[in-house]
Amino acid sequence: MNCIILIKTELQNNPRLPFYANFIQALQKGIRGGILKAGESLPTQRELAETLSLSLGTVTRAYKEAQKRSLTMAVTGRGTIICPPSKNIDIVSEQQKYYDLSFVSPFEYLNPSLNSALQHIDTHNREFLKYHEPCGMPRHRKAGAAWTQKFGLNVSEQNILVCAGAQHALLSLLMGLFRAGDKIAAESITYPLIKELCRRLSLNLVPIKMDESGIIPQYLETACKNGGIKGLYLMPSCQNPTLCQIPEFRRQELIEICRKYDIKIIEDDVYALSLEQKLTPLAALAPERTFFIASTSEALSGGLRIAYVTSPDEYFPIIEQSIGYSISMSAPLMAEIAAYWIESGIAEQTLWAKKEEAAARNVLARRILDGFPIKTRSTGFYAWLSLPPPWTNKMFTETAKEAGVLVADCTHFSLHSPAGKEAARLALGGTEKREDLTKALEIIAKILRSRK
Image 1 (cartoon, rainbow, N blue to C red):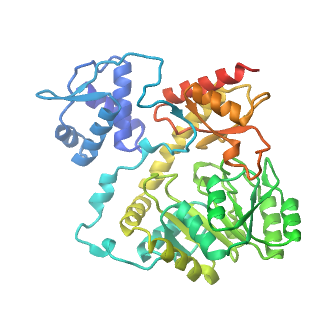
Image 2 (image 1 turned 120 degrees about the horizontal axis):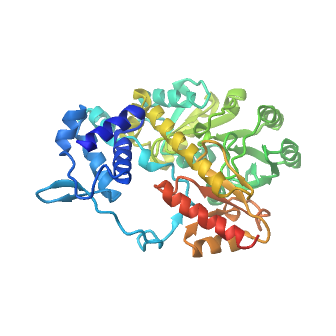
Image 3 (image 1 turned 30 degrees about the vertical axis):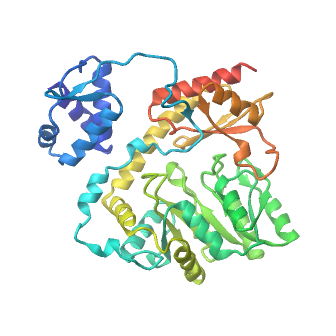
């Protein structure tokens, strides 16, 4: 059958992609090329599983994905058939009123299959349903050490704590390391959640001037001389939202300042794995005072909610206590899924597929927004658009929303009020289809040109 030939071709061309992604691509190419006609029947799920030597669950997921994307439909008595082409209407449907480029969704359609993980888990093993130590089960901490190594940090599993995602890791660190009234330094444009967490914990965020290479050491030292700085929060490899990367020499300068004034460093490098270029983590340069957050959500699945924190020996009990106070422990069942994906190589394959998709979308963004001040990284998950005059943050956000596109402007990230910079972050994985991203970016380009 044509369908099977197309699928086999995709599997040969993209052996590292999950099966359902190859299945979807095969259908899309077959429909576009006229090889698969509307109303044509596909093999039954069991037939396809046997032909390709796959589990039935793997094939079932692929069929469900195709149906969700309106590529196929189930018809009583005929099984699964190719859908008739839908009308091309240049109006965003009411169900999806906006193209959402405001939230960094890490290409969720490329997430690993849950079936393989569930088949791996021993359903008779009750260990995953019991209470465990807040730092996590030894097996899961070992997987965390292996995952953290991908960031360039070699650490013992004895220094790993398992958290329920990077946000929970950040909360646990702030709760354990600091007290109400303490000052935490951060880049003047930074990850929005740190603002909200510090506000709720009565911690004072001190904005430090930054440039294209991130936080500027001399301004950090000035803040330290003024007194009271207890911690430094950084995303040094791929900052959210500006995409800045702190160079090696500047990392050394920052560490010298932190040692001089006894400052603890929180290194939240969740997007580092999305890049090809990797620099030495601050945690490797200053392990005695740096707490490193290695998340799985951005690379594997937003719903997985597992992250690993490395801590110096001295502070390990304090952070473990924070985890215990907040959620008792991260769900062992979720940690087991993460461990299986890491150990089996599925995590590496998924990350490769997402970086490949990100690369194509960055090319798309640079082409459509050519001539405008847009900053991208070759495999980054988002872009940073500086708004040319006369655009302001509010004006651009509202105009884009009226045109059907959601963006996150600089006011969400700035520690100053007003923001002091007119810019917007564009999430490149916020739309499932590249065609939708193309439309969204073309709308933005049209808006920018309207007042050039």
